[in-house]
Amino acid sequence: MDKSEKIKAKEEELAAIEVRIQEVMASSKMSEADSYFARGEAMEEAANRTKLAPRKKKETYQQALEYYRKALSLGNANAQAKIDEIEKKVK
Image (cartoon, rainbow, N blue to C red; front, side, top):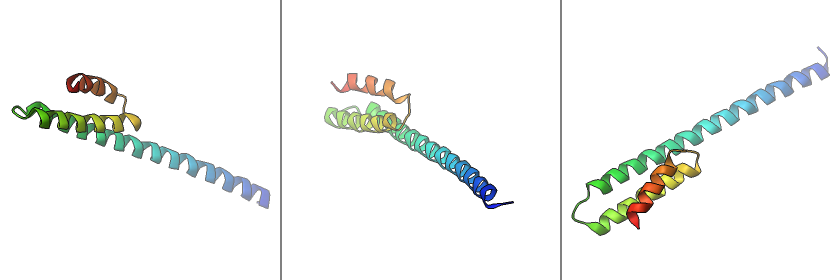
């Protein structure tokens, strides 16, 4: 095996590693988006259970809204529907 073949083999190996890194990064990003979405759901549930404190209820909805917005920015498509739903409740 001459030097050019070794270089070509190393370049192919490097390209495969770069693809794997991109896959891991995308997976990590989706996990983070899912985490924010779950937090948003928890805050929304807390707001739904708040009865006699309208200001606290609104603040909790606002917090849920922020989590859903972060989830959407990280690629969670389900977050948009939740954002629309909560924005109606907060107005």
